[in-house]
Image 1 (cartoon, rainbow, N blue to C red):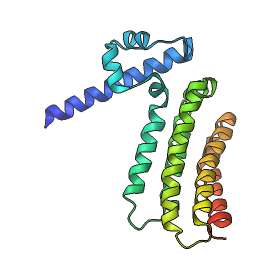
Image 2: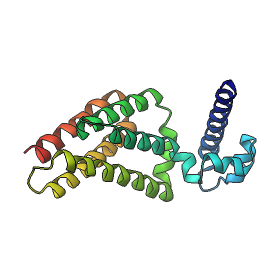
Image 3: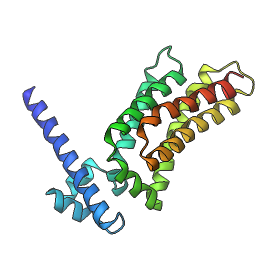
Length: 196
């Protein structure tokens, strides 16, 4: 049992070390100019080891967003009787607090915004959020007129609104306003689209 714990801690350290080295190299050299071989060498691991932790170069930048998406999907699956909007509210407020505490995560955001490949990957993550959320909203609002259309638009508005607010807030370094702003988006979608 202790060996498993030691192994898990070592894996976590290796993961974090690779991610830190990648961020430093992407920030100093640029995303496109940095190779996986350079990252592996600087992190003192073999390229195959790097690829076990991060299956692509894009994962090195977006690994936190991917992990947060997977956590949200798990939260939705285990929601039992909790409304999907409540699961979304808890998810985005928790994430808003995490982003507000990090602040330095801005480097990854800048790299993503400056790189077309990463912007495309970010759109795929947003679409996965939207698809998962829409499916659950459709279950919760089974009796509303035009259910499929309204829940699809609601999911798109929730996810797009969250990313739009986060982008605006991070540009102004006003992280303290992030949670309040995303809650306004949720309330607007609930009252105007789903319960009207």
